[in-house]
Amino acid sequence: MKNFDERKYKRRLQKILTSEILVKALLKLPKKKRSMFVMTFLRNDRMEYVCKVLNISKREAVELKEQTINDFLENVADIQRSYLFSEGSDD
Image (cartoon, rainbow, N blue to C red; front, top):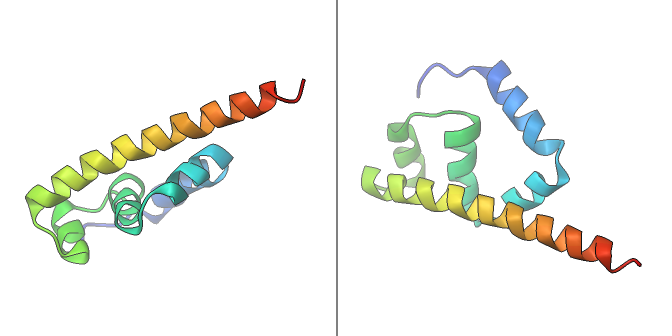
């Protein structure tokens, strides 16, 4: 593993955890994608380490990382839409 910057990790984690939408979007991801998200986007781990932990090839890791960010962003959009629709139904 590379040099781990705990302060940077905590700041990133705090940004995610202070947003209900982002937390829900992250929790909607399957476990493997959640792990990928945490290791690559929050902790900034090296791909070699991620491959070892997830027991996948580098090619698979690159594909999984791309799927993970796409799914996360899709989850965020879905949750935001559901909030907008639920706010509109209170009339």
